[in-house]
Image (tube, rainbow over all chains, first blue to last red; front, side, top):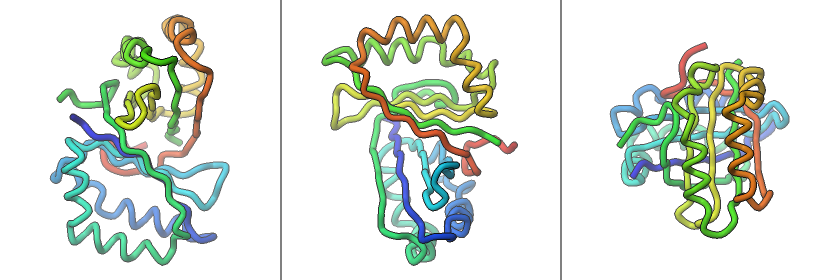
Amino acid sequence: MRYGYIGSMRTRPGRRDEVVGILLLGADRLDAVGCQLYAVCTDPEDADVIWVTEIWDSAEHHDASLQLPDTKAAIAAATPMLTGEFTRRQLTVVGGLGVPAG
Amino acid sequence: MRYGYIGSMRTRPGRRDEVVGILLLGADRLDAVGCQLYAVCTDPEDADVIWVTEIWDSAEHHDASLQLPDTKAAIAAATPMLTGEFTRRQLTVVGGLGVPAG
């Protein structure tokens, strides 16, 4: 079953765009490891928050990606710029437009 | 600027799948009105909630879609099955995998 992830992170003041840059760095290579969508968003009403929406072939693909060297390096680079305030929601993608069948 | 929308709705007990069906009914036609992604998700930990993640060419495209007869009919059909508890977040999509450039 396709796996959906909606998460947010709060950055230290003024560091949002640096973290966005880190998140986007390897995004276009994630399709090789089972990622269908990885959308990085900012909030016009809150300058220090980043939202990420993801769709993966499965929860296992998502979990495995967290062990990749590139992912670990990105987390290590971004963490000092984050406050530690996160939200996350793990969902089941049931369909829609732009969602590959499967 | 591409517009992102993350929203949730709570359904009356046992009505979730009917509402999901309504949401999916016209989803594949939304690309004609500026929608790039319309992903309908359920929550394995809460049987009465639906999450929808959307990416549109602009906020104006999203807002205009709410005035379409099909959209109004879908809202009218779904509303009696909802509790009235919603969340919504309006975002700016800055990039990623599966996000068309623009």
